[in-house]
Image (cartoon, rainbow, N blue to C red):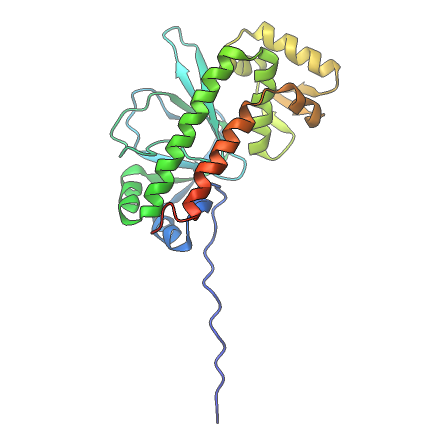
Length: 252
């Protein structure tokens, strides 16, 4: 009696909810999956303080996001960038032995993939594609910081506020961002009175509402019109640099 054999179905590899890792092949993810653990980040949790050894690398997933902030001697701080599912935090290029320069704080709570930075280095040594991806992402992160520096020097408080809220919404996927006026003012490097004026005007226009430490966006198209073009410039650079990982720029 002849027997027919059903062809084996292709192996399914669970794809992480992190867009940076989505650039990797299944074989590369096979190297990383066993060394990842899941971690729940609560709002306000500090991942690193300036000077801390960076023992872990964090990959925000889905709607979670981390704020990188430069700290000043008087205790104030200014945000340099917001990192969500498009990126990673800590030990991106170095082996993690160098100290952190910024304070890294969970801004939007959610789940993360976490890996010991030393183990990530081993995976980078085993795969040229993983190594190339993180080198390229370091370039992208630097462009984000450069753009933020130029934005802070050249654009109005209104433009910068709109840019930040739109950026946070793109990561959260909803219409609400957990944020107080004091927090927003601190991250933008301006006094609370400036934030009150901007948000008060937008609230009267029906663009946003403040409610219990959260900003709720009622009219996203109008808010987008108020922002500067910095988000678009950074997103375009990300798309160009990281797309080459999948076109022969970093084979395993």
